[in-house]
Image (cartoon, rainbow, N blue to C red):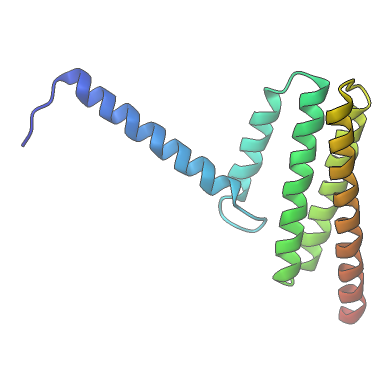
Amino acid sequence: MILLPRWKKGLLIAGAAIVSLAALVLLLDSAVPGSALYGGKRVLESTRGVFVFTDQGNAQFNMMLAFKRMHEAEVLVGNERYSEAREALDEEKASRELSLKYLVAVTDKRVFGGMLVDSEELRLRAEELSEILEDNELNES
């Protein structure tokens, strides 16, 4: 057995804790609705949002959330979980609209233009998914 000084043991334990926390964050970030880790993902997102203080930061944060909800909706449609996909699309739209609300206050035209492109891309993807969901809802009736 190797004996380490107390400070080295503490350093090893701290390092292991940091690596474990980073791995957990990565796992949470990839969770989709219905998975065991999804609640943790939403808590993590809310926690991140608390540390956003500027209009530009809020615009970017909400656009990021919109992209995440769009990805979730696409995964859910692929898994034929249509009602959950509809909820994810509704949340995507709310995040996208909130992002645009904050974006109005942003004066940096490069950021403004780029986020308008992102918003339009999301809007078009949302329309495509909505059509798929509507077709499936008609087929289920």
